[in-house]
Image 1 (cartoon, one colour):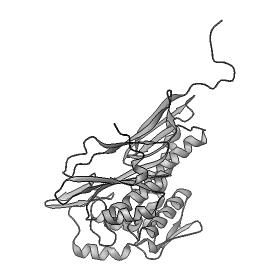
Image 2 (cartoon, helix red, strand yellow):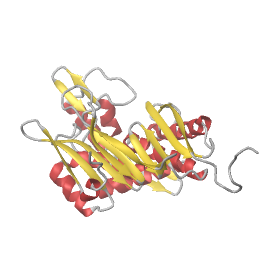
Image 3 (cartoon, rainbow, N blue to C red):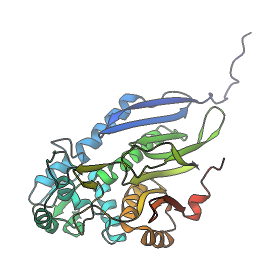
Image 4 (cartoon, rainbow, N blue to C red):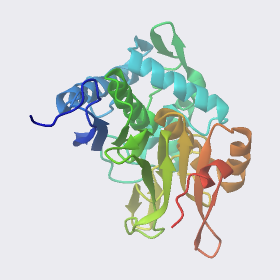
Length: 326
């Protein structure tokens, strides 16, 4: 008689990997289950649904329709959820995270349309009255603006939200062990199987020159939650001697200028982490640390540049406990 699984014993879990290209970047989903309950087509459908709502690069998307409208649009659940979070973080951070920065982002060449030169001071001054999330409101199912010309750019948190939506897809199929990554933004739960190894995530070591990041700065171990990083070393534009990072200060119209090089945030979900990592980058080191002391639900790892050009780091106590030491 052949050997088999005992009656009623759970089937062994194995790893399933799904990956592809979406939202201008790559995605990777690894989950551990007895069977392939979630297929690539399931993920692709979910990504297409989110792009139809939130992507500035999809001409007919809901966010583009809002940006082109004089007054507003009826919002779907994706747009409502992400805008609600964006408005909450805007208020919580004193406007350092502001999704209405889109006209300035586009003017500096970080939007869908290419630009040939940096904006003039006069051009920036003309755009600043269109910036400010206090001009945007959710009223029932509608998303409305006070001023025609106000535009939204949710790219700063859309990838974190997408990670959460894909995690929810896995959860609906009763998958409790997974790692979801979209453009470097990550959410994890459980352990790796077979074997039960804990989930580990690397934090890039940035290069403050124009070279790409080299290697890992830290490795952290998570049981559950989202972990995201915002940095001024990844995306920038150079026009001769003028160099601008992609994180634009909504109050001045120019790139944030402070000593922070990157901010990695751990939170309950990737959407929350993704929103606050951008906000911390705009605060500078002292204000960021003070903010984190008041927001104990956030754990963070900050890299900053000393006056002599060297890079140093600091972390909240909660983040320090997550670091894997060799």
